[in-house]
Structure formats: structure tokens, C-alpha cells
Length: 64
Image (cartoon, rainbow, N blue to C red; front, top):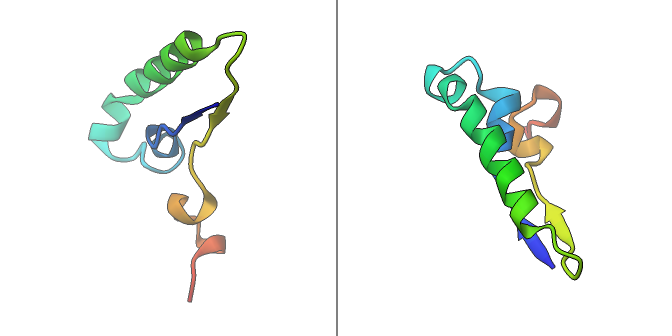
């Protein structure tokens, strides 16, 4: 079991309006794909923990 937790994927949803995150878009995607490909082995299960609604900052999930 591998837990792959690329917090950068959350940035693809919420932070593309920030130049630094927008400039890193391809690196976020390519590095996540690379990690999955390298870890994808017959005896390994990969759990991809990309983010959660509270961390993403959507108004509907905001706490009072």
C-alpha cells in the first residue's frame, strides 16, 4: 500500500489564478503521473489523496 498525497493537485482546482501555481501546472501533472507510473507494481495498491473539499476552500464547505 502506497499513499500518494500530491497536494499540488488541489492547486489545479483552486489556485490557477496565481501566476506561480499557473506556471507550475504542467509540473504538477507530470510529476504526479510519473509517481503513479513508477509505483504501479503488481503487488502495490496506490491510494491517491489529492485534496479535500475543506482544503480546497469552496464556499459551500467553509465552516462558520
